[in-house]
Each structure stands twice: as structure tokens, then as C-alpha cells.
Image (cartoon, rainbow, N blue to C red; front, top):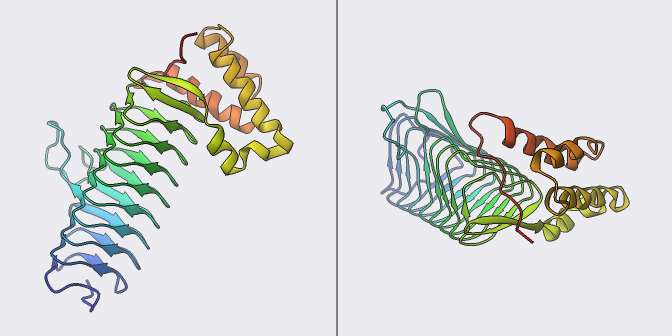
Length: 272
């Protein structure tokens, strides 16, 4: 640990912590023995970071966050499991990110994510890159979120749920099953409402191959939610469209959601 003028004199740092000389630690922050903090990362006032926690470069961690503390899981046996946070993330005020339940497991946050105030990321969650999680979202244990997904405020996500890339979850929704990629989901009970057209347009997907990729996604959505086919029949039809790489990802996500042990199955579409 290298003490520099970027560390406030009231911060409490364990001598075993590995802190890059360019990192900044705010007033009354507490950093535990097994914590590693990368270059140009800033830790806000009163933040608590403990456990085997590795934080990468250029992260902004705001006041009163709590990262790497024990999971809220009765099975936890005291193991020093791992929290890994990548680069260029913004973790806002009062966010909690818990370490996993068992030794050798990882709670992971990728790169370029925005986690807004009062959000909770439970044990064993795995969040990819460029995800936005809005205020007061609660993720239960073992939730997986793919890249570019968006979760609006006050969403509750059940344990073991998977949320696909470029998906959008509306505010105050209850998410009990897997959210298919590229879709908009909303409600209690939640239902697939449509394709996430705004994000598909902003990301450039709508213009790929002169719009043919987007047309393929629209056709896949029609097959899944407007054709009257069973889920198994619709997934089989999507397999035949796998030359479109986004449709292929949608097919693989749905197939795994429907078939793999431990998955909760995909959220259905709205009834006509």
C-alpha cells in the first residue's frame, strides 16, 4: 500500500491493502486487508470496501457504498470469496455489492457500467459491460446480466434470473423469469412488450447490413410472440434463422433458458 496525498487522513486503510498511488480515497472510507484498488480510481467518503475485493482502473465509487461485505445468505460459512470490478464503472451512493456464498466463487461487475444510488447487487451476480442499473434496483443472488441491458428504477429481480443483452426492463417491474435479449419487459407479472427499438437504433444494430439484421430480429419477435406457436415450436423456427448473428444469440439464450437445469425459463409475451 502506498500512502499519498490523495488519501484523506481520516480514511482507515489496512496495511495489507494494495492501493495504486494514483487512487483517491475520501474521508472516513474504510479499506480492508485483502482489497486491491487500481489506477485513478476514486473512493468516496464513508465507503466500506472489504473482503477479497479487486477493483480495476478509473472507477468512481461514490459515498456510503459497501462493497465486498458478507452475503445475505444463511448458507454463508465465512469463506473469503471474491468480488471483481473491472474498469471505468460509476457506482453511485449507497450501492451494496456482496461477495459470494462459497470459497472460490465470484461476484463480478465488468466495464463501463453505471450502478445508480441504493441499488443492491447480491452474492454471485455476474454483470457484463455497459449495463445501466437505475436507482433502488434489487438483484437477488446468482443473477446474470448481459452487455448493454437497462434496468429502470425500483425493479426487483429474482435469484438465478438471466437478463439478455440490449434488453430493457421497465420501472417497478417484478422479474421472476429470464428476460430475452433485445426485448422490452415490464409489469407485475412481467411480460415481453416489444423489441427494444430505441436501444437497437442507438447501438447501430438497426442499420447493420442495410437493415436486414433488424428485419431478422423483427421476424424472430413475430414468431415468438405473435404467431401462436408454442415456445418450443418458435425456438425451433429461430434455429433456422441462425445466419443472423443476433437472432442466433436470441435462439441460444432461449434454448438455454428453456432447457438448462437451474434456469427459470423465459418471460412470456403479453396476451392478445
